[in-house]
Length: 432
Ligand SMILES: Cc1cc2nc3c(=O)[nH]c(=O)nc-3n(C[C@H](O)[C@H](O)[C@H](O)COP(=O)(O)OP(=O)(O)OC[C@H]3O[C@@H](n4cnc5c(N)ncnc54)[C@H](O)[C@@H]3O)c2cc1C
Ligand SMILES: *[C@@H]1O[C@H](CO)[C@@H](O)[C@H](O)[C@H]1NC(C)=O
Image (cartoon, rainbow, N blue to C red; front, side, top):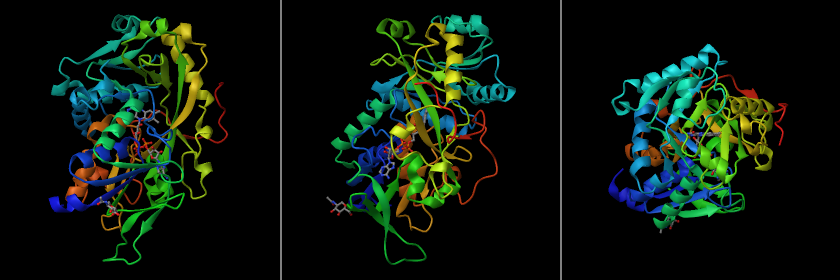
């Protein structure tokens, strides 16, 4: 695209979550003058955004090394960009399995390690950690038995306060003149609008209509609705499934939180992962990252979609509670019976091979872009994600094959997850 095109083009972004905000900020910074962002919640961060959370892991090891270099680039931004830096805490990442882990899970740890072990950026940053003595030497605050824990420790990693990052990028977008329309009536998109005449076999998307009937026209429309994207383009359901994980917290006192300050992000792959206590609220956050849960029962079109109201997502499955309590008995037994508070399901758009989908929707003549398939690893890319979209707009086609629209399911499964996904309906729920 030429510079003059850019100077007049209007952009409509649907969804002010991680991908939408990063894209808005990037495009506004690179000279697009007329950007409007819509979101169904009445404020940013949206309660529907997967990234509206105390923290997310920032790390560059991947079972697929393609993402390692991208994540390293993102980490450099987390370390240095004044917009992102205040929210990033490089506490390191301890990635291990417990004694009870199945061999496949142990194997995944080895794959992750292999992606960084011999990478120049990680020289002197990574080491194996085997057994309780080495674990406790690394993290003296772990008082439990940490029986048989083994894996590795990576210093070039940590976490970001993700809700605060969303807030900061939203504020930066406002400074750059990006317009936001939020809330059910004005911001929640009910349908996309298409031109009545088609040209060369394609029908252009010309904007969107909100629930309250507001019409937003734009030269380009960008869908960044996380797991909700099939509600506007059901055909993407072939390549993407809405899935969720359970998130829960325990409340610590200020003194308890102080004792755990600075611990690495700790992922016991077969149990759950957790972070240092949140610096504002003293909460410890936990997530059991198994095969994730689907909600096919919620849709008549054979799609798995998030619940439409926040209250329906306010629980975690009982099995998740078991994993979290087992983890606590292993690592911090004094907290093993604390109530699990702020329980909720966090929804992602899962592609079949965990690759993002960043492409034009076929048949729309480059008027409609979809950003999806975050597959639970999108947040770390927030400082650079918008650039991927800008490149797509500039080039007029997706040159990165991995990120193209896929007409059907690739045959290979994901090697990234432990366990298969389960349907939510009928699962027992954790104690509140
Ligand atoms: C438990 C959990 C842990 C995770 N941990 C990590 C991690 O450690 N590291 C990492 O990198 N990533 C992590 N992720 C993934 C990360 O949060 C996502 O990849 C990222 O948030 C995806 O961004 P998105 O913009 O596609 O979707 P979202 O951030 O979910 O944003 C979607 C937005 O669309 C809006 N929306 C939906 N429907 C409509 C509509 N009809 N009209 C208008 N607006 C609409 C929503 O309100 C929301 O704001 C985790 C996810 C979960 C669930
Ligand atoms: C921005 O784009 C919209 C939709 O194309 C248009 O109606 C509006 O006039 C534009 N605003 C400016 C300031 O150019």
